[in-house]
Image 1 (cartoon, rainbow, N blue to C red):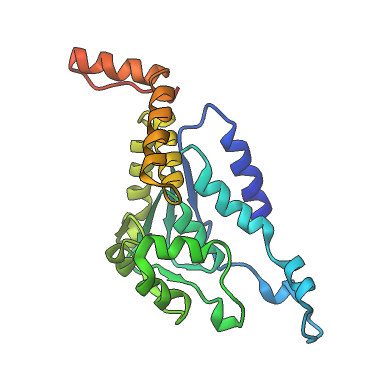
Image 2: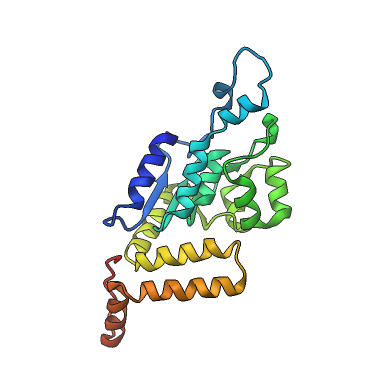
Length: 234
């Protein structure tokens, strides 16, 4: 699954015909995480540090980087369990919509190893250190409703309404100026580790790029004619 995600997201990043990305699980649960039992020696011997590092799921980390960095809006819809890597995959999206009874869980320390797949970067930035400690150090499970209340995700809805709510959000984003949306996403990611002055300079650079797009011209024309814009994402 992870290899397929890497391939699909890499292809999406270079496909000018795409306007948005929608991630969702195929079954009752969004994603149960990486299989660390299968990844380690079933013989019961304690792995050496070098062996363990070689087994770290680098492809999973690449997926998180692609979701966070792709210059397309990414919506994730979650029902059932989102565990470990699956939880962080959902949190890396720009917008995550979950069923109210979905469960977000970071079980790494319960299994005896330190958190991975971007959890220590994503969770504190979304909900602050106090709640991040509850999730990462205590392994507390967070429902879809609580995740929305905390600001961990964008929205929680009743289970039967999940597909409709997510698809409406995808359609809304896809009909927007997606080239400018991608630049805004890139600038917000940059701002996580930049000074105010650096972020202002990045905004000026992105503004110049977005003003060269057809969507910029369309937005001005629609404003002049007092009609809704017809953005094309370029």
